[in-house]
Image 1 (spheres, each protein chain N blue to C red):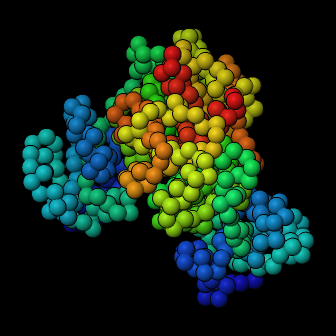
Image 2 (cartoon, rainbow over the protein chains, first blue to last red; image 1 turned 45 degrees about the vertical axis):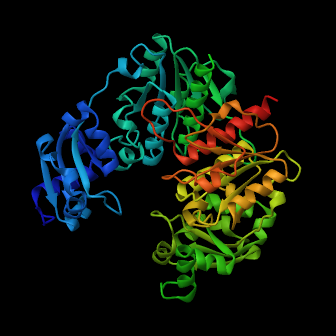
Image 3 (cartoon, rainbow over the protein chains, first blue to last red; image 1 turned 30 degrees about the vertical axis):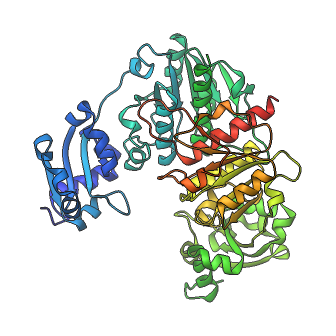
Length: 267
Length: 267
């Protein structure tokens, strides 16, 4: 059992928690909590990607027999409760944390591999909770994938991972260097690209999303950048009453994804 | 200028920030940041409810002439930047904070005073960000008001206030002691009450929300309590693909509010 925060593995875990560059360099991310761990172990491909699992002493005592056989599946290390708290990203650590190798996605996966493409394109989205919620909603609404501008919050940020509620394991995503170029390539593939915009030409429920569709969503505070909005085929707006100036980005994304889902469901 | 955190006013601000009971006893809440302050000053009734405004030294230097006349409208106190940071609820304090007297709402306001009622009923909702986002979306979607079970997170929690983006000043809300009783009274007034439920009898877009409508939304982790769900006229579900088990509570609420908005807009 590791009982010191100056242990090399503990230092490495802290580094992976805090620094997106460290996670990028190692090609890994951290997955915390029993619910998320269950998702990992329940999927053969993800299970094979677990590099190591860290358990707190308290968790081992509580989980007991449930953990038998775990060390046959992957490498396991026990941390004292204090050390586990130190590496945990949550206020009330739940005692299980895994280092997991990333899965890379290609554009073909984002486009749904034969399903009718339904792509979310996120431009400079910054809030980890919003990012996680968009992944979670994307899975539920049947979106085929997510494209992200390079300056979006890191999907592998522990807060994002947690708020995806597991959707990050199943929704393909891809960071793109040049967002306008990526949008052009979607248009060449026959997708209609809609920009969610306060000055939209029409309401979001007046367009037809049954064919290949992509939606551009902008930053929480500043909305969509003009160079991104300009790439869209059409600007759509969500009607707003009262003195509301905008909607939360994850809410706006959800409304567009579920409108697509509704139209496709109702033919 | 106040330069010590042991000053009585500073202690009182900290208490109001941290303790919902202290806020309840005084019948006040805290409003922080220039954007939210603008909303306060822009509304005659709210302006009259400002008890005192606290400014950081840095903010006074930066805002300069913009603040002239402020002390004719309300009492103003300057805090050193360090003391302001101490009372602020944010990591990067923006230098303006007001103590504001609450406005009480009645059931008639929740029902829209003659508009077709569109009420959100929140049962044990706990996350401040979700609560704020529901207020923000409610204003934009034209919901008439919000009912809350007594054990929901405090709407006057500074994090909730902030994430409403000002909607808390305009969307009527009411805590109720007995949620099932409140639901019954809505039904007596002719509203149809729908419970968002994983085991809904029909999809959320298959019911007619053009008449008086209320939606029951449950807790983030546990969903709607059975004693609350039982009061509804009908259980509705939001379709979910993939392995998604549920949606974020604010996302689910948004989909229902905007479906209502869509139906009413399209007649």
